[in-house]
Amino acid sequence: MKKHIPNAITCANLFSGCIGIVFAFKGELEIAAYFVLLSGVFDFFDGMVARLLNVKSEIGKQLDSLADMVSFGFLPGVVMFQLLTVSDYQSTYLPYLGFIITVFSALRLAKFNIDERQTEDFIGLNTPMNTLFIVSLPFIAKDYPEIIGSSITLIAIIAITSYLLTSEIKIFSFKLSDTSWAKNKMKFIFLILSLILIGFLKFVAIPFILVLYISLSILHFKANREIKF
Image 1 (cartoon, rainbow, N blue to C red):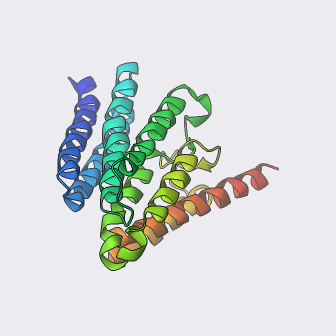
Image 2 (image 1 turned 120 degrees about the vertical axis):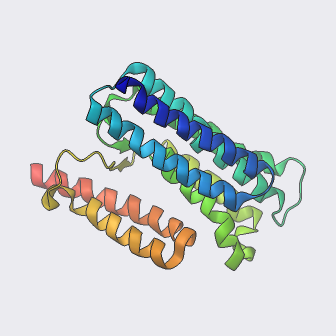
């Protein structure tokens, strides 16, 4: 029975993502964002539970990627499609560029599945973090409509995030082999600063958290290389 628990959690991720997509297509992007958060919670715990119960399996790995493709691949594409639809440049075809995020998310997930270098950490931005950034944009648009409402800004975001998804930038994960401060200093700093930012800014904090995540990851791996030498 216990071997099915992680897969059930993964299916909950998929289910939440499907609901989020429905709301995104209806233009209710803020509600969709909350379902992304829910999917993220399930995505975090399915792997943790699998490791705790020692029931990791190949089907679980494949199911996880398929669920992520929906929640963190197709869903952000739909959100970007909707943002481009109401951007300052009205075009029948422009909004479809939003699905470039979906394409590069698929490439990212496929790369992750076959890349043996990514057993502990990530190479390239992970799809959940990228999706959190994309779904934060409608919230930011409330205060800065002239920025998020710009088709040029949105296209630039598509290009930058697509690059980050498939880049060779090493990004730390939160699979902790131990909880020592020395080995995980940057990760703990990231969590503390992220919680503070979210407490003050809520979804508007996500772009700052994304920059912080990448910056601290670079510092983390640079420090680890120096220690090894």
